[in-house]
Length: 384
Ligand code: F3S
Image (cartoon, rainbow, N blue to C red; front, top):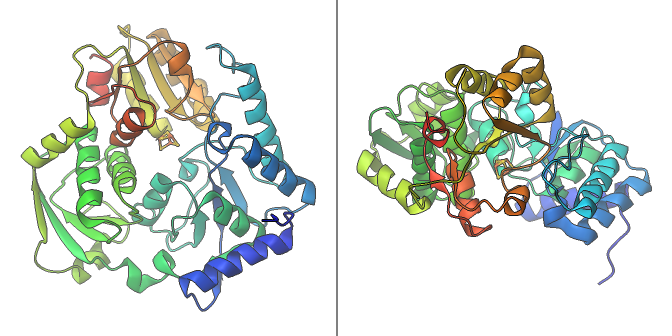
């Protein structure tokens, strides 16, 4: 099969094929795009050359475009764990290609920490956890784009008008009652995973979770969108459209989830090793507030094992200026940017039993990397 040379027309065609396939009558202009499929570890030589061809074609993005994490740190400290030099250079080639078309090398799965996203704004984002956050917490409108469809939207400035872009598709089809008291972020992730497993892509209205900070809601949504193609969960008292959604949700709860079921799910995701050999926190990437809290909670302590904290270069820079990064590093943590919790440096360091507070990370560390992760709160991961 002959692959057409990338050009503006090719990107228009991709959008047209999607529009036709989805049954959408037209397209809607978007305010931003978030492109995934930019990690050399996933896209390898063929994907890298494709992005370089796109850049050579001269196409430019029409809207603010952010990028998902790669597989290595690419800044000055990129080689501190002895990663393969060729892998780092290839990751840099990908980033150069993306920058040439006008995308910003944010290299993060939390693009909402890089620019303000307005309520009701249409966006075309890839990265399932970011899409679920945008729809649920910010009240923006995005389908779960692939790397290529997000790129085509970035270049053309539009996306087909279907799915989460249409108000009636955002009405909850199921009500789920949680009867479990206050949950930590690891158990919120287990709850999110259960939700995805029970409801698939159906939009749910979740009540009874109580107080829910940013870490918890991120862990819930990231896990739900790992278990199933979930794009939107309305959470009573927490998410952007919960008042509207609560009135339209079915009156009777289709499912009631209690602590026993959540704990069972946590145990299924976790190896529960008694002696984790490191801590991995930041899946999705840590925000400035989360880093501030970790710095505060662990002030003056020394971590008993290697602790890796994942965030974006932008947030890391802010955390450095505010002094949070320095505090955490003095406790023994390493702050990694540009890359993801599936970072290949762990293998180099011979680490196999990471503790993480993210159910999404647990799922992938176990199933894609063959490690033995333990799912527990950040406090337990860091041995407080
Ligand atoms: Fe982000 Fe990687 Fe987790 S992209 S959501 S840190 S698996």
